[in-house]
Length: 211
Image (cartoon, rainbow, N blue to C red; front, side, top):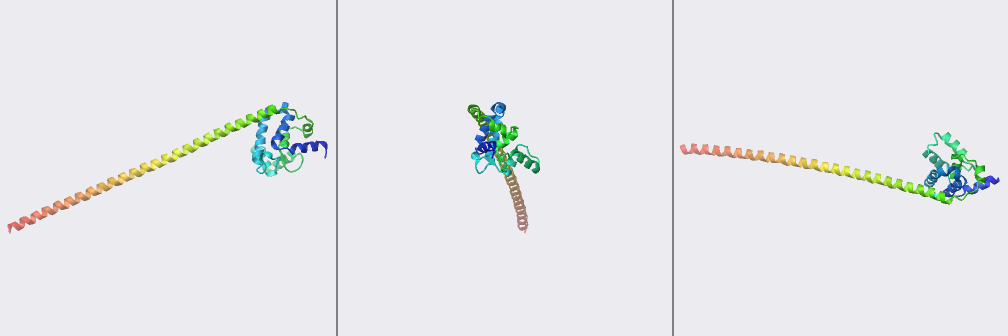
């Protein structure tokens, strides 16, 4: 194994965060403006590495494909495999974050391993802090939107329930009015029958009186 390969193997044995720091230390002057973007890539690697999370070192082919898909950097399976072969510098059929960064920013491995690991800790930590603040702000905003949606759905459901109750009340009122009309009609019929009965009784009484 060449000296370059040996050194590179040491770097890709680091976890995702340390790989990102190594890249930024080597290329801080050229890629300082990309620091938040690079930490964003690291966050995506954490999320896709279900077994190891932040302590992971590389993604298998399936999750590497998912990562590239999220970035819109794959169009076909064939292209994906070609990209993965180009990124997989050590040919272990897995994608380390550092391999992706060297591929993304077009930095040759030989140059990277020769670069001094300059001390840019404060700047790197600040970039990471800014990303974390931005992510927290995004999460808060998403939560607010979700809460707003939940409140809107609840209000909509309550409005529907209120409308149903109003309709039920209207139907009960209509039924009660109908029942009252039917009762009034029945009473009128009864009174009419009673009136006719009394008239008939008086006529019979008059006839009996004449005899």
